Image (tube, rainbow, N blue to C red; front, side, top):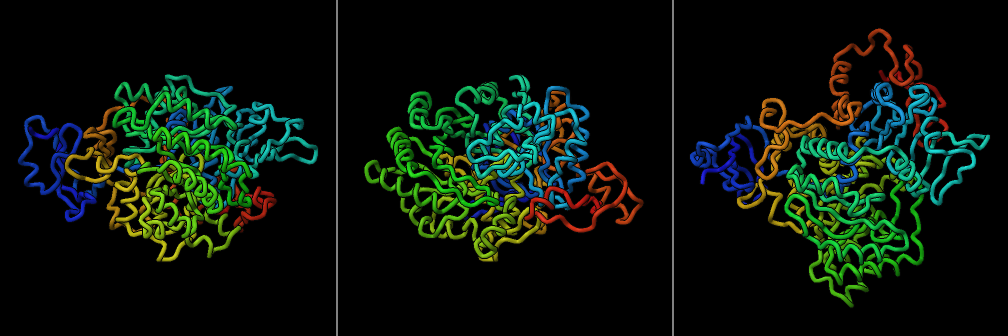
Length: 618
């Protein structure tokens, strides 16, 4: 049978032992049917075979994110203004001002994670005064990592926050001297206040959520992602909040392979949640595009150690072990894989005590279970994880919070946070992901850059050479190694005959670009199951059309996704003389250059802008 699709004239990274590179691939019925020499593969073409010349570009297996929140992210993507990758607060505020102008009442303008103040040359967030000046009537909500949210006055009114609103446990509503909320919400260290506030905003109707999910998937395809494992999330109930992605899956409109985990929703009733779910769905249920993957990342609320490095490490409650043991026994009895959020080694130690106890009574027998995050896991606990057959899924949260970690724990402690090289040396399955969208960005190339360079998105070096990964190892953590975490080893992750035909043709050669340029890569042609799901430039005609983002005022229509909105503006700015005539400040809308010193981030009074405007950088 002639193949359906042939890609040739490229440098194909197969990740296969003994044959690491190829000149061409053939795809038949959604799988690779040949990988090798172009002369041999081109001979097999038939009259209906589509042949694509990739122009000598690097081609890699489709990237897989082992920890993201794509289902929740898809429902809200069209509502959110993304500051991911934006390099200046001035640009970010120009985007905000433009979006405020087109957002109708009672809708909000939302910037929900994916960035850090330290990526801005001003190295700060906007002040509350600046937000209120830009948006006196339109509610604005800005989530910064897991540590804080900024609300303008209109958002405070929409949420009903007044001087009589009490602080929730683990959170703080900052107030002025009269007791009135200022608009700054702090996780202390529980981010529940931030998320509960975000949940008060208007939602999209289902038709719009379907459109939004399609746009988010296409954005991930643009970056070379072909598969994800969804880690569930708060306010993401099964099966109601999975209805949109299930409908798209049934219609054959998913452009990602999604394996999903179920995240407990009811504090104190976690075991009941999982008992009910084990009667509704089984691991692996679904198909190769949408399938169930087990439990987590939250198994019990008492085991959550919040990763706000600006706050001290939280102590887990004394009853955590008993609650966790009850849930793990339910999972092992029903042969459910699981994942568990754990930032700190102290939390991991206590969880492992539970796992070892259950394992003695109910052997895990090859169940794929793993910890998520594990930034400060110790060598001893890495060995305990290996002994129990567990894995570790790491994310590039340190790329966004590394400076805060150093400030609290010191550079020496940060130098092996997380200790990925040690995990690999111990033989533990290790995979990479993002934890997008509310903390780190969904851009996989930012993660790959962090793995290879050891630098934060602000350029701060965290690690020595012994902690860095070579480019091939880092790529493997984003492809073949991530298949263990969805129990799909050998089905995808390599350019290999018989595996799913998922691949990305890159905008530049990952293996030869300067290390600091890795984060700028994207895909110019993305294929999932032999079908083109994204194409740009000379490949745009191969990609199926996508309907416009809904609603018509969606930020996606104006700004796109990761750093797309400001790319041309930055190029124009970089090409202009540094000391050109005075230009408008994008933060405050004045035309003068004001203050000429960087804003320190460690001291709240200066951090919140009381020392003046830092628009001097532009």
